[in-house]
Amino acid sequence: MESYAQILLIAAPVFLILVLSEKLYGYLRFRHAFRSMDTISSLSSGYTNVLKDVLGLSITILSYEWFYNKVALFEIKSTFWVYTAAFIALDFAGYWIHRLSHSINFFWNRHVIHHSSEEFDLACALRQSISVFVNIFSFFLIPAAILGVKPEVIAVVAPLHLFAQFWYHTIYINKMGFLEKIIVTPSHHRVHHAINPEYLDKNHGQIFIFWDKLFGTYQEELEEVPPVFGVTRPMRTWNPMKINFKHLALLIHDAWRAPDWKDKFTIWFKPTGWRPEGFEEKYPVVKIEDPYHFEKYDTPFGLPSRIFIWAQFLTTLGFLIWLFAHVGQLSLISMLSFGGFIFITIYAYTDMMDKNKSFLLFEGIKAVYGTCFLMGTEYWKPLFYENGETFFIAYLGFSILCSLYVYLKEITPQGSSDLDYASL
Image (cartoon, rainbow, N blue to C red):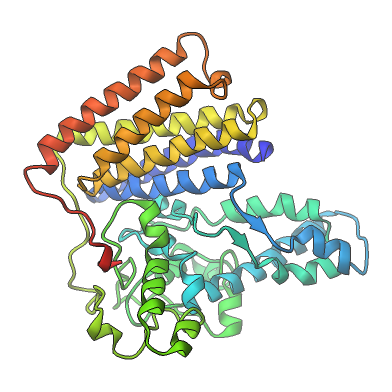
């Protein structure tokens, strides 16, 4: 946990710089609009994902180390070739996990956030799930465990494999010649993120594209079919926590309402998007039928409000970096409580981005929670240097005042745009 937090201390600002550099390039070179709400939503999803991982909010039922201890037939030295083989094995497992996530209703909930952006850029690469609390996919690495690949090797290779998937989330790199036959390129992954009928559920490879060619899920990007990005059931929210659980909420609703007990059980394991017969008419959900003619989700704000939203986003990054830098000095309850504060902060400002009146409630909860915890306990004391507590309380007060401005200026005149619970 501590070593991962140290890696994130470097990776988080680097990723932010790369994301903003891509946006600047797109604007200067092609005059592409910078949809800042989408970018902030994507990066905020990344915040929630790394925060969940650092806090250890997940369970692995059968870990790779357990498999290694139980089934390893050999013990091999950790040479360069072993690391290479482990990387390929991890990618093979990643292909099947990815494919299952697109194929089965229940598993789609763990992956839908990554596809939820209607843009395809480096920021959307950071839209990662917080809805997976139990990891059940370690068994895909059984072949590596049988051959005696040590857990330490997997621990080194896994983050490299993950970070290597960042670069190809861009529209600014065209086809790459002979590399198209070997590795996943931006062209391949544009196909994967597209909702065009020709492209749906194709190109599941993470580093190597030959898995898709071998197992029949490959599709080349066609010049005459420009990819359109997003999900066929659009999320219509910037709030990453709502996005994470919206598909699950629909499954729960449909299972509850299904008159047939068989449907109540099998809906979880049916192909992605399956609903009981007649439910599309009886309980309709907004769906994009024509990917070439639909309006992207947008919530316009005036300049002062946009500045405040960016300030909230960057301040939250500061909180995260501060937490990561102090992981080794904090107790578990200190980390969990401060992590909870960050989760509330993200929920509040992304709900504000949706122009939901309810954001003000969460902003108030954040202020009360932060003040009471800071003043009433010793758990957060190691996080603050001299006068740091005063600045923190000042931030909470300033945040409330600015939130009231946004509420009165941007939201009240238009009325609430809260998502209807039934629409989930």
